[in-house]
Length: 490
Ligand SMILES: *Cc1c(COP(=O)(O)O)cnc(C)c1O
Image 1 (cartoon, rainbow, N blue to C red):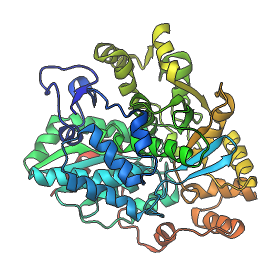
Image 2: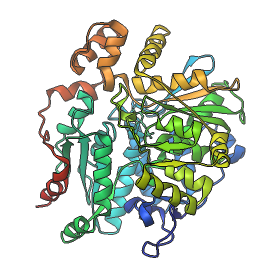
Image 3: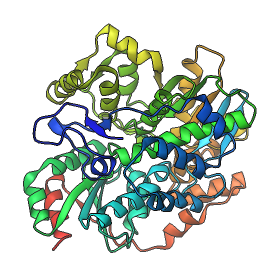
Image 4: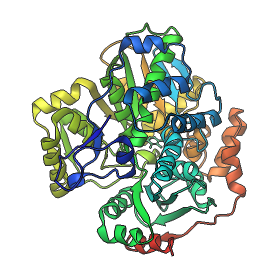
C-alpha cells in the first residue's frame, strides 16, 4: 500500500511513497503528512477468522492486509517485542469495570504507558529499514512525558539510529523524567527545554524542515526523521489493539460478532483515536469514537462545534499532562480522509496563519457521524479515580477522562471500550492524594503509599529508576536546541 500527502503535492516531494519511505521521511509537501492512499477492508469474515488468534497473530494478519514493504522476518522480530509485556500471551488485557464498560489496558510494556504499543515494534522496523538502505538516521522526538521514554527504550543500541529526545522541563512527572535522564544508551540524547510541550513539538517540526540543519547532518552522513505520532509507522500499530479489544469482548461473550461498540479514547495528538478511526474504516463495528480530553479542550470544541481555535488559548497544566496539547497533529489525517487534500491544505494553512478555522455545517456533520467528544476537569477526573477505586479498579488520570465522555456522550445502550493509556505508577502523586488525602508528595512517596495501602506491587521497571544516576539532566533554552543537537555529532 502506498501513501499520499494530506496537503497535496508541491512538485518537489514524490507524489506517492511506500510505507518505508513514509516512516523514514514523515514530512510531505506544504508541511503535510503522509496518509494511506486506501485502507484494506477487514470485514466480518476477517474478524471471525481471528476470533481465537492471539495478539501477535492478529497483528501479523492486519499488517499483511496493509501490504507494507517490510520483510516478514523484520515484522516477526518487531512483534516479538510484545513478548516482554507483562503477559506475553495477552499483552493488552481488557478488563470489565462496569456492566457495559471495559478498559483495554495499553500500558503493560517496558515504560508503563501506551506509547510502547507502537514504539516497541516501530523501533525494530525503522532500524531494519535504515540498515537495509545502509543509511544513518537521527530520530527526533518531542515528548510530553511518555513518548520520550518509549522512544529511548525502543532505539537503545539499535544500529543506524541515533535519537534526540526533547521534553518540557517541569512538564513531566518525576517517573517520566527519570526514565529519560537516567538513560545511558550511547546512541541516545535527552534534552530538557524551558517551555511547554507545544514548544518542544514546534522546535521539532522546524528542525525537520530546516535545510541548514539537514545539510549539516548530511555532511556527517546522517538524515533526519521523527518518531512522533505523526509518523505512520506508529499509527499502523495503533489500529491493531482496537481490533483486538473488540474481539476480546466477543470472546468474553459480552457482544456478538458484528455488534457495535463505542471506543472511548483519551486524546492529545490523536494518534490513538486515529488508529480507532482507521479500524472503523476497515470495517470494525464501531458506533462512535468518543474523544476524551482534559481542560485543554480544543478537540471537544472541534468535534462539537467544528471550530479549531488556538487564538487566545494557552496550554493549561493539568493532572493528565500527556493530553496537555492544543495542536493535535493527527486531526489533519481526519480532515484529509473526510474532505480531501485541497480542503485540508486550506484549513491547515489557516490554522498556521490565523490560529483558527471553522468547518462548514456539512463538514461538521461528517465529523459527528463518527466522533463525539467531551472534556474532564481535574476535579471530575479525581472523582472518577476515587469512584473506580472504590469499585475495585485503580486507574490513572488520563484513563479517568474517559469516564466523563462515557457518562455524557453515549446515545445508545452499547458496550464501551475505554483505553487505559498509562499505569498508575506514572502519575502517582495525584492518585495518592485523591485516594488517601494529604498533600501532594514526591513520586517515590506516592508510589510507596499506594503500593502499601492498595496492596499492589510497584513494578521493577519503575522502582529501579530511583537508584540510577541522572546522567542526562541538561536543561536548555529553546533557541539553543539546534546547537545542542549538533554537538551530539561532534
Ligand atoms: C500519549 C498519551 C495520550 C494521548 O494519546 P494521543 O495518541 O496523542 O492522542 C494519552 N494518555 C497518555 C498516558 C499518553 O501517554
